[in-house]
Length: 421
Image (cartoon, rainbow, N blue to C red; front, top):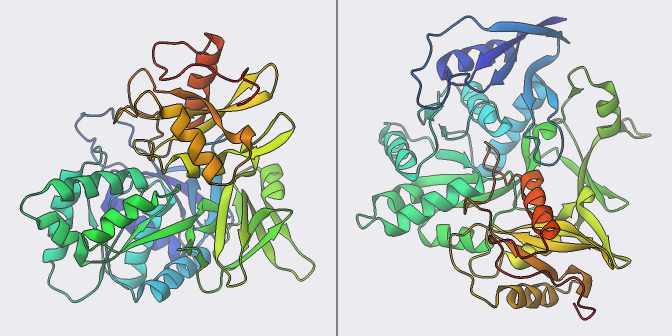
């Protein structure tokens, strides 16, 4: 056993140094968000805090975002982290220099630091603890591109960050940001589904976007553009995606019940992680995610995958960030509601357009949305990671239904009692 040290992610240099020690067999590291309130002066660097003991093979503990359930504390070995870094480099075209644009307490941020440790090339970093802005990203990217070496440049973002950067580049009359985006050998984007239209806009600026799929339990993204990284295994069991290979986590800190539920060993001795995602793998080995297994609702006796509804409606103008949630109905049991930011006015025919989109996607009539909701603040509720806060979005929709579907922040009425819906 060895100590587990909590380290604030605002102390990037200290975090990187301790991660390097952890990869070499030293104390394990648990990166945590800054304790200071936004806008406060950063506190003086302090000694990392021992909070527990973990197995000798553990290098890092990462707390999951909790977008759909209570957060989990994932145990990652040095071998899993290194395997992920090497597999990523093999697919991207070699090791390089990275820009750290995500907080270091998320697995994507940890992996940027690990990749730099593996190759001995410290990453550039956006100011830790400050909100992400396109302007800050542009300045950090410019600094990264000015470094005098021939290494390829990479960064890792979540979709909401990419959208802000692409929008800023499109509006930049100098063209500097677009030029620098095109100089990245790859921009990894993951954490949630990426709108294909956003990827096309980035490509039009010269950027190479690589869509990643994975989780903290797989040491980050382990499937790039639908294809598993070298050494990563993928299969489906009763429609649920399972992943295996050298990047798998050891389990969860002090939570054997969750560990047993999420990880399994087959008759051949291979360990598998049950992702909780529904999906398929085609004859060429390309993986497709349909949605969360726990986001399947039964409406009028028909099973509806909310992830598939989301994919369909996100192609409707002004609905690129839409979230599909379930709301109760006395006749159908549950129906689908859509929560969307008020970034654009979708017009009075929004509900009809969404229903047309779900029909065109081949989804059953039970998948047709019955309610469109804009949050009171105008912005879709999000977690600190940038992912939609589905719990908050669901609560907003259910509150609207309890008010009769005519709350002032809804864009359309409640139609679940229409038998033709």
